[in-house]
Image (cartoon, rainbow, N blue to C red):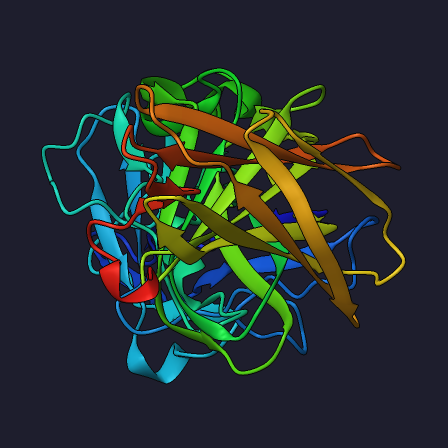
Length: 390
């Protein structure tokens, strides 16, 4: 869990009477922003910030915040090069004068539209791409934060920024390979893919509440230059909107560059705003075509476990799929199955892998045509992977 705190001290112009008929203008450049991720309780072993040593979100090139008043259009404040990599940023005032008693609002990241409707600031969580295993550099573009403040005596403007969503990390045990995509599926449409924020809301809780414009039961993100050289955890980071997934099962599907896939499942949890979550899947299954011919054939499924002692039950869902053998090496267990010849219509079968402790399961689908050839297993077919079928 994390709590994001930020303070914005706006530069102002003070006018003070000196001698009769004379005025002086004093500019006080004390504009400061501090965006800090502070862990408080659970999952503190996880580093979700840009700086894993300090666990802070640090300003970087291209960062900017937007500030709007209750009666005006927005202003953009860009982070200057001297403040890249820091927790704070200093600005000059650029003529921005505070009006006593006026309400001010701010948000990050800046949306480049000076006609922006502050009651409907657009946000979206699709399009995320992670580059490299266990990388979180992409989170900043989706780390939506909002704040509201008033100008007290002396003209100082204070903001406390609050995260709208939260960083999630998914650890999935896999074999060596190159990975291209992660897809999470839940039973109902609880993932907010696109929505809006009302900066002008009356309360802080209302301000950080997303009004959905697109919801789905799936969330997908790309994996670029993500390669595992040994068996272990593929770690995927995503910035996600609030969602209470208690009682739901999250099905994870990891696509490989060769078109094959890994399947895994885990129990969902409540994910309120600004709450860091870590999901460590107990195991995944990797189905692959082994032998295919017109007399039936064989298939192979590898189970990759986090703990070599994890107990599983394996149940072929059809009498034409039968177990042929099993072997284990460390955390990897290989299951072989025979598929009977088929002379009827095209048919689908299943093999169910169930963890005996949690009761969570992963289902591998087997597809066979009426001639008897296996035409697919898992999420891919022989049509575009003929080199792997015999």
